[in-house]
Length: 254
Image (tube, rainbow, N blue to C red; front, side, top):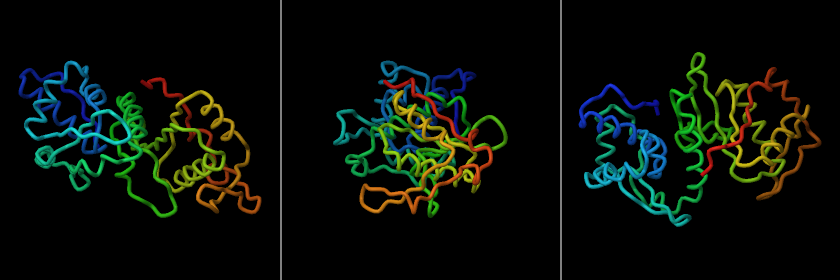
C-alpha cells in the first residue's frame, strides 16, 4: 500500500469525499479489515464525526460490517463495489478479500488490530506499507507483521514485529536470528520490535545484548532445545547488527 494523505487543497465536498474513500479503501485492501476508530483516525477524523460517511459507504455497497467470534467489536471490510472502485484507481486487487466468513473466525484479529494501530500512529514516517499476509513467502524465513518503507534514505525497508504476548526465550532468539538472516540477505534493512509492556521490553533487550545467541530447534509441538550446544555470534552475519534492531514500548495502546 502506497501511503496516501488527505489533500488539504480540495474545496468541494465531492472531491473531499473521494479523497477520503480512496484512503479508506486502500487501508481495507491492505489489511482486509479494520475498525471505525482506526479508519476514522486514518482520515484525520473522530468516530463520532465519521458515522455518516460510513453509513453512506455501507448503503452504497462499498464496504460491509462483520463480527468475529473472538471479540464483541464490529469490523469493516470491502464489498465488491469497493473492489471495483479500487480497480478503476489502478490498484492491484489480486489479494482482495470480500467474504466475511473468511474473517468471522480469524483467531489473531486482536493482534492484527494492534499492528494496524502501531503503523497508523507512525504513518507519517512511511511511504509504503505491506501487511503480513501480503508479504511474499520465502522458504526458511518467517514473515514479519509488516514491512515498512521509510521516508528517510533511499528505499529503506524495515520489518515490524508487534509483541502482544510474552514469548519463551527460544522463540525470542529464533525471531532474532530469523531477522538477522533476513537483513544479511537484503530482504530488509532493519527491524522494529514494538512491545506491549516494560517487562517484555527489558527482557528482549537483555537477550539481544548477549554477545552470543543460542540456536534452538523445535522438536515437539511447543518444545525447543539448543542444537548441540550451538551458539551464534550475530556479528558474523551482520557486522553492525546492533544498529539494525530497535525496541520500543507501545505508548498508544487503548
